[in-house]
Structures are given as C-alpha cells and as structure tokens.
Image 1 (tube, helix red, strand yellow):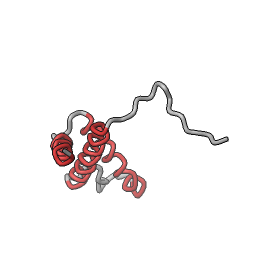
Image 2 (tube, helix red, strand yellow):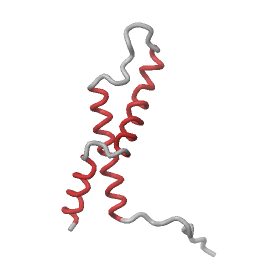
Image 3 (cartoon, helix red, strand yellow):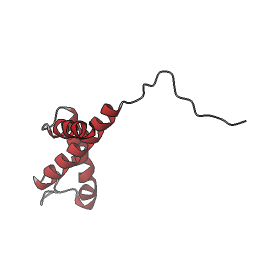
Image 4 (cartoon, one colour):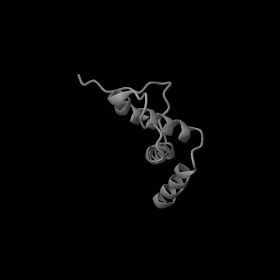
Length: 90
C-alpha cells in the first residue's frame, strides 16, 4: 500500500502570480537591505558599541527592516519586477 501526500482542505494553493510577487518582494527586500547597509544602518557606534555580538546580528536587523519596508509598499521595485516577469511569461 502506497501512502499519498494529502493537501489540507483549508490551505489554498498559491497561484503563479502569487509566487512571482513573492519572488519580486524577496528581491526588493534584498536590494533594500543592501541600501540600508550602504547607508550605515546597523553599524556599531565607535563609543559604547555592542562589540562583536552587535556586529554579527546587525545584518539580521537590516534584513527584517527591509522586509517590513517591502511589506509596507517599499519603493515600487517589486511591482516593477513583477510586471516585467508577467510580461515575459506571456
């Protein structure tokens, strides 16, 4: 007897457009994270800094800030990439 995986009745399947938008938002978040890094967000201050621990975890903070910025609408990069991916796939 072979066991087949089942899908939860309450869990909707993601459409192709949902998947493309998720990828576009992920790319925008990565871009924003790099821009925040370049802007000096999360850098350890010279005086009274948190040391090596703060340096190691600053990237996590920047990544989460970038994700939140993207979820709040971002800079429109995700929508532009999504539109380009949709146009390319047709």
